[in-house]
Length: 408
Image (cartoon, rainbow, N blue to C red; front, side, top):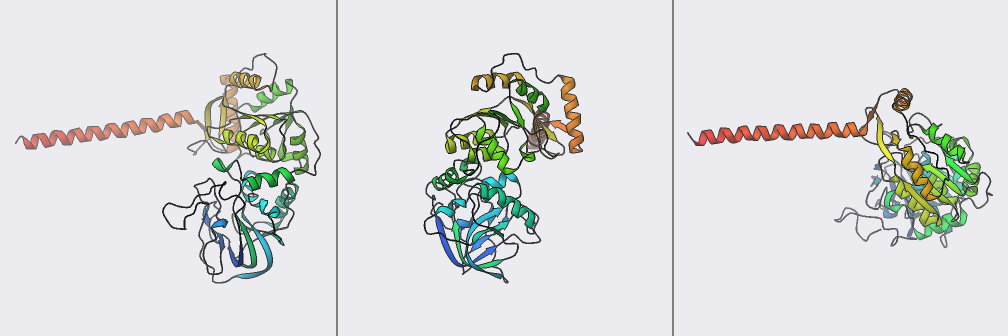
């Protein structure tokens, strides 16, 4: 992290180069979870305090190099003692993507020289994290190199000794990871699992729950890709071991911008060619491609062929729940250029009738209506224009009145 103090100006930032391998051993450390009364949120007061109640900077979690997740908690009045020596793991998330990107971002400390610990200690995103979920997440983490048990601080704890490593990976501009984190992942992730599965793999979103977005007419894309010899893979229906085996075996991989691509970036190899198809007007696809390139030396291409984003109301912008409308012809051309397909028979986009049917289906799934993001933006711009026009007219009336008054 940059050499500044908490509360100073400029604020703290995370530099993965200068902070690489940074770890602090804190005796009698306070591990403070979010308040039990707090609403579940990524942005809350939690983390590690030293014995004097000062925030341990290495316990700050980051959503980018400049965006802090956790703020300084207050020193707890009452704590439970936890004997032993632990590694601080940061915030424990139940969401698959946030878990493998952020909750595992301090696992590199397991290979740090001189570090010996009894377990990995997390603060939960929300107090009351189910133990069954903790064990399920640990099962996945163990396949990626997390060889110590998980412990969750659902109440304030004071720990005999706590290693607090700096976050080594993350979202946005943290996607390249620190050298220590990349080294750990490339040594351990999926090492015990043999490749098994098809050479051509499409990571599908068509069977996900209703609050997860995709692209309109994904069934049509699956039909086109089956004709190219692709296996349609639904990772949520497979065990972690099966997912890793499939990702290690495939040579040509196509996926929408989605969390499983992060796992592919942990366990894949340099012989793979991956196309990441944008399903929403966000920068996620470029970051995913960058992870694959930096971690594994893969050929990775972001493909942008969006026509519009369809937003479940009352949403206002593209999100994990929005649905992308794509130009299938542009997608086909991009996949031909990237070497993922060979067929030249045209891929027609959705007809107006097909699009209407998809929007009706998706709207029922979300129990709401879907609105075009282009139309949402147009309405905003029209509202701003009306507001500006009204302001100009009001100013003109004031100017006219002032001139009249000045003229007597």
